[in-house]
Image 1 (cartoon, protein in one colour):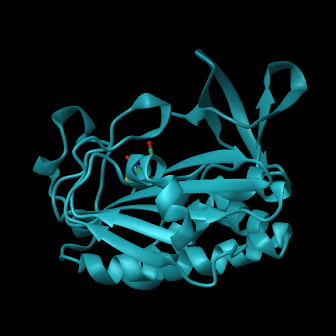
Image 2 (cartoon, rainbow, N blue to C red):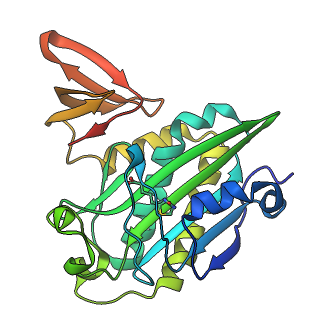
Image 3 (cartoon, rainbow, N blue to C red):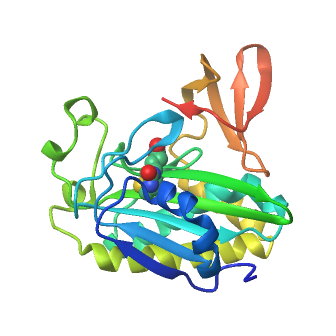
Length: 248
Ligand code: BTN
């Protein structure tokens, strides 16, 4: 068993429902090729977090799921943030633009969401199988998004005014995931948290609406905790760390 990615094997599909579902449904066969990146030109039923869909028009975005083993369960709480950092690193070095990390792992530019990440894990005997699904809006025009999303969704094309080659983006994404997952494997937690704090700097100290288990609370985004949680300042000087939920 290869314990951690030094590289990713790659499968590119013409079409699928969801690259994450494809990997899951074929896990018995595909595990032999781990670490593996499955990408697709189009997804018919792309999935987002909180049971939402992910709009995946043909050849407009990167739709990819990375399958690999996590060697140490201590890395699990930082997995989602690490993937967010990897996506931002790749986007910044590729385009020269500035991107922000919205905890835990939405990626924004000019306050619009350009990428999202869906982390899933399967614990099987002695193995922690990670499936990290990443969607990046690359060459979308505004009309490619449903009307309700248009004010909040962005793409590299909308941000820069030019089109970006998808195959280059996929290669760069795999390289960046490799490099950041290696840091996670080596236990470089302080580097990861430091980078996450820096990339979240526009939220630090801000009053936010936070949705958690069906409830919405107002609080101050105080920090990202050393284990990757969100440290929220609540009324009455209470502080609480959250491990799931969404910022507005
Ligand atoms: C989110 O922000 O809600 C997460 C979106 C994740 C979308 C990606 S696209 C590739 C992979 N396949 C899916 O069905 N979803 C993820």
